[in-house]
Structure formats: C-alpha cells, structure tokens
Length: 224
Image 1 (tube, rainbow, N blue to C red):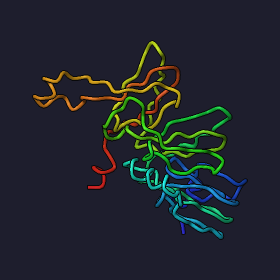
Image 2 (image 1 turned 120 degrees about the vertical axis):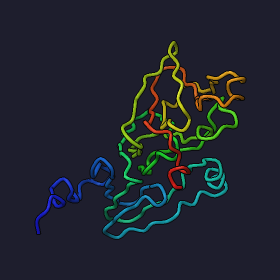
Image 3 (image 1 turned 45 degrees about the horizontal axis):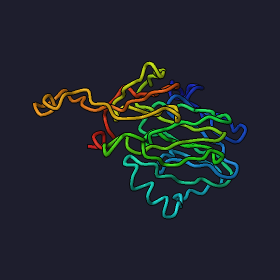
Image 4 (image 1 turned 135 degrees about the horizontal axis):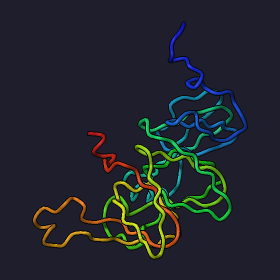
C-alpha cells in the first residue's frame, strides 16, 4: 500500500527514554515508566500497560476545578507504555524547567507534564473579578511541561520600563514573577456607546516575557 500518508514523519517513533517528546507539531508522545499527568480527555492513543484515572485532588482540587473556568482538570497516567496527547490540533511545545524556573500558564493551554513539576492555582494579582485571566496555574520545579497554542505563539519581552498589555482571552502564559494588574484602554463614555471591544487588558510589568496566541476565540465560543 502506497501513499504520502505513510511518510516517515507521520510514523510513530520507536520508544526512547522515559518522558515526553514531540511526535509532531500538533501532538506529544510520552513514554511512561511510572506516572505522569495530563489534561483530561487529551489522550488520543496508547500502547502498553497503562491506567488512566481522574486526578483526585481533594477539597483543594474541587476549588481548582471550580475557579479555573477553562480549567486544569487533570488525569494521572500510570504504568509502562507509550501514550500520545493532543488538543484540537493546536500547536504543541515542550518546555524544559530547570531549578529556579517558574511559569504562569492559562489552564486551557496545559497539555501534559512530568510528575516532578509542582503546580498550584493562583488568583492573578490585581485582576479583580474578570473572566479569562482571573486564575492561572503556576508551575515550578524541574521537569517538562507540554503546552498547546492556537496558532503560532508570539513571545513579547517585558521590562520594568516597558509594561505589556495583553487580551485575557489571548494570553497563554508569562514569567511567574511579573507584576500583574488590569488596564482600561477605553473611557467610560466610550464603553457606554458600545466601545471598541478592547476595554480591559492584563498588564504585565517587570523583567521577563509573556506568551500570546494569535486568537481571541474562547473555548466556549469554539464549541458552539
């Protein structure tokens, strides 16, 4: 049987050392030897002896699921084998954390990660009661985190002298130590008259970077 479908770049790669790697631009392969964590519903295929369980997080976990909106509902994957993860054919990126690294990530952009990484849901300081950017996941420790992005991401440097303002529906993540707040780019009168649709942004200030996706389409809108 012959077809471009069977090109070498489309074939599953042989098992390598335990851990994650990119299968291609839109999927991640994880060779499991013990345990790893992934977004619920993101597994597209597996082979070997693996068990998938909804991550039990107790009372704190119930709070996490309740406040994250787009969410960080996780499952644990245990055993020995290989699993492939993807989400809506979005672009996949693997981030390798070294000691001292910390990254704030929107829950909707988390795909899977090593159990050696720690995460917690935090309220974004200064964000008030707005949607999208109110709660995010802060990752620390050592290990790998796979994130997804709707389109090619834009990485924007942030400095104390040059704060960056981002749409809360477009932000993927940012350096965890950056100062955050809300910025209104319209006058009250303009908002009453209908406004530009760009009334409030998340402000980031300090030394670091912010990751933005080239799309403002929300998960809810995409589902309709």
